[in-house]
Length: 319
Ligand code: CP
Ligand code: NVA
Image (cartoon, rainbow, N blue to C red):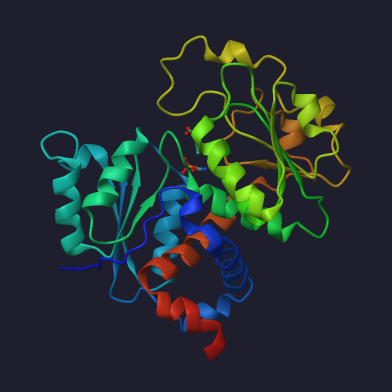
């Protein structure tokens, strides 16, 4: 049987706790030293399986390419093609896949499903997006913020829905000591238990976390402005939801309240003309495609840590 009792799962970004900063440093180093990968194959002989119950461009492709670059074999399993959810339980699927694979990533609807897979798997499980958390996105987001930290101030603003991407962004900002103000419409605030967790972390790091309902208040003097779609995957049935976001579009007028050197962030895919205008998405302040690229580097760092910690720890000493 593969795996061991001391495996680390990544269900939400705070599962990495104090290691997030090291993970980002490692990712930035590997990004800037591509030659390193000529002779560094920490996933050699390993297989990383990825289950998708929802569509994906960035997560799927960045995992497939990242695993290959690390010398491993990626295997993508689309929900309709496997027995999971139709004639086999999550627990039994976890037990079976753990016999073949060295790591499993899972994009699902309810967060409880990825938690269940992790509970019954003997190999590390990475949440590739659930309704509550998107830790791989947050790792790339925090990497992008760190990369831009020379020019941007440390005040991050969120404008939009209190969703999965915001949850891990707040936890990531709290962990690395960035301040974050999130503006959400009334009734669409982030989950209280996630914010409590973030506030606990922030007590130690000194990060300030604040929730408001006014986008202008959130972006005042901001160093980064982040938005995401107003209606997430799985919420398409919530017909009236869009109507609650009047005034929450990130447009030229709103960003004029930010610091001149602010960076614009979006996890993508973006619905241009809804939560963000073309003018903001395509402006020189926009780092959205750097964020998308960083998904791969951040996940390569996480995969190496979770699947081959010795290589992760010693690699830079040996070079
Ligand atoms: N940001 C993100 O997770 O994109 P995909 O849905 O394309 O994977
Ligand atoms: N909040 C969005 C993020 C997509 C990457 C969703 O869950 O659909």
